[in-house]
Length: 59
Length: 136
Image 1 (cartoon, helix red, strand yellow):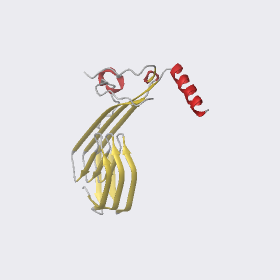
Image 2: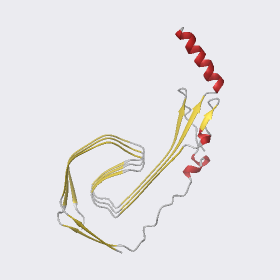
Image 3: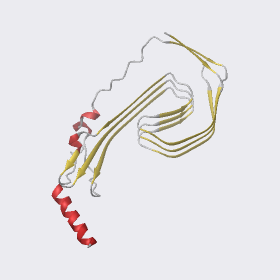
Image 4: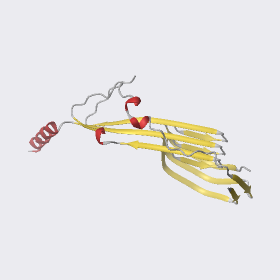
């Protein structure tokens, strides 16, 4: 595959962003490859109703 | 041909949790963030708890496509500058990247497990009764 790009004038006044989060990218420039992944899990068993026991201790 | 990025003004209020602010060119960026977010009904924090190995989300293999495809990229930069007047960001977090300049490979990975802990139903009812008693 041949991918042809012609970059002409690019001029931006102002960029205002509230937040960049969880594998996001704000880029001014050129790059070859970007691979961003984000996993968010809140399974049914993550809702624990009962006494406040600590999670498994770190090990 | 790579272009030059020109940013006159940059303001970032906060950056945290494996985030990157890169001014200038880079070749490789790899950012990883793992988080167990626990919300409890009451203010309670045990400092030594949680084990990433116990939760599948942290070891789940990512279905990332390979980047070895034979692509011929022909890029022509008629204007060698990207001009930006100002960038104003309130916060960057959890493997977020703010990059001014050129790069080659950028990789980011964020894994978050969200856990909620609530009190037992009977206890909740008791609290409700207490609250009504206070109102009366």
